[in-house]
Image 1 (cartoon, one colour):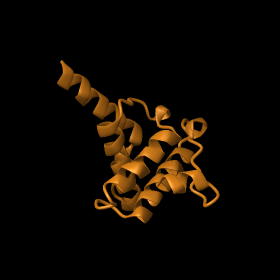
Image 2 (cartoon, rainbow, N blue to C red):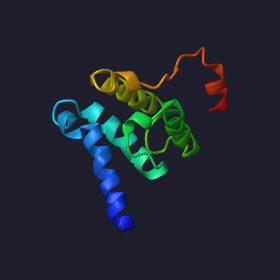
Image 3 (spheres, rainbow, N blue to C red):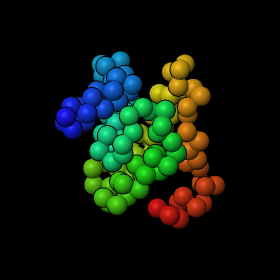
Image 4 (cartoon, one colour):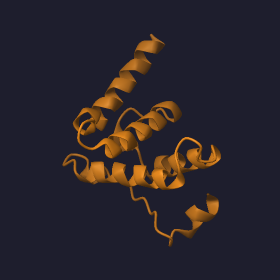
Amino acid sequence: MEVLKIDRRLQLLKKQFQLDAYHIFQTETYQSLHRILNYVYLNTDIVYIQFIDEEILYGYMNYHRKNHFIEISFSQVMKDIKNYLSFLENDKQMKQCIPKVDLSLRNHPLWTEL
């Protein structure tokens, strides 16, 4: 029963991320969304992407920092977050769910924490 629940959660997340629409033409966006999907699936209990907030995205950055950016570079982590936010902006249903992520240099507490 537990495996069925996990598979259902993964399928729900994949459906919401609409990865099939990006696979052919926008490979960078596809890869960014896929990495964030994997992070959310493996490190949270989130089922609906409306609940991915700025804390989850900052956690994504922190996860890669703790792994010394071995999997992907720091700049790629930033691109992933920007691609995810762009994905939300382009989806009419998700526009009101866009997290308030501040990646500017003015967000001094974020950068000192990293």
